[in-house]
Amino acid sequence: MDLNQLKSFVAVAHQGNLTQAAENLHLSQPAVSAQIKAIERHLDVQLFERNAQGMSLTAAGSALLPEAEALLRHMHRLDHFASRLAGSHTDVLEVGIIHPLSSKKTAQLAQCLRDELPDVHLKFRFGLSGDLINAVRKKELHAGFFLGSNPYRSVQAVPLEQVEYVLLCHHDEAETVRAGLPKSLNRCNWIDMSAASGSSKHIQQLWRQLKVSPPSRIQCDRPSAMIDMAAQGLGVAFVPRRAAVKAIGSGLPVAVVEEVAAAIELNFVYPAEYEENPLVSALAEVVARVWPAAV
Image (cartoon, rainbow, N blue to C red; front, side, top):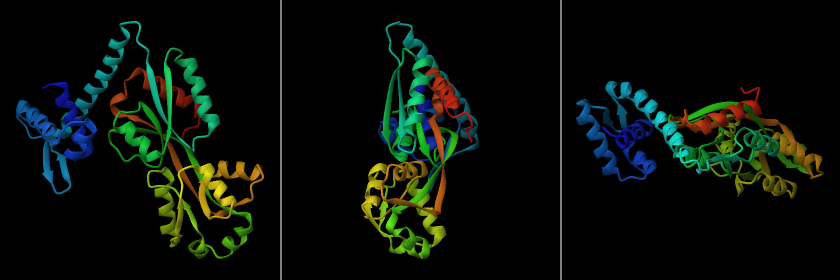
């Protein structure tokens, strides 16, 4: 039984689907299937049951999974240690950043990492929550930030804070919107974000709770541009409160509709296999300092 076979076993266990596991491993489906069968032959036990939903662990598979996960975590730590033996190796730490994360927090995070890891090259990638957590899941990033509940067993999530989102509109439209809530929202043009954004799922849940369906006229994944569009009277947008307050303070003709708001959890996420990775461990400690009152 080799390491690649264990990686395939863990990937299929996490995904519950052979095709998705193969995609994450950058292997063909037959190759992953062959590796699973090889482990089962070696152990003389069935690890998965096939069903309509995909593949689920047997009792033996469930018993093996934590041991396999622990071994992979240790291998990542050993790989990192071995890479440093040459002496000339430069560590790179790649972190996914989302727009709801304030620039002040991002700068504070970078400064603390520079103090803690002076020889590490830092790379910050800005993106949408859904895209970044997928990159973390595929280990294309060491870690990142994500809005909402973590959907993946292969990803560890640490809750940090609640980000409050509010409805923003042109200030001339605010009283009209407030007067007929929630039905007045059905007459508002909606400046929406794509499904990959962390707020999109929660906004749809809010609409269902309010029993409304505002028409989506514009889709934009940049909060600052959404605010400018609202200031032009192009529609209403759901944005972080701190961004809305900043816009009002800068003199933009926008107003917050306080009656329509929601809190969304901000999480620090990283691959479960990286639990013992020294760089990720150091990053997690820095994140805990930057967010001392983590939820």
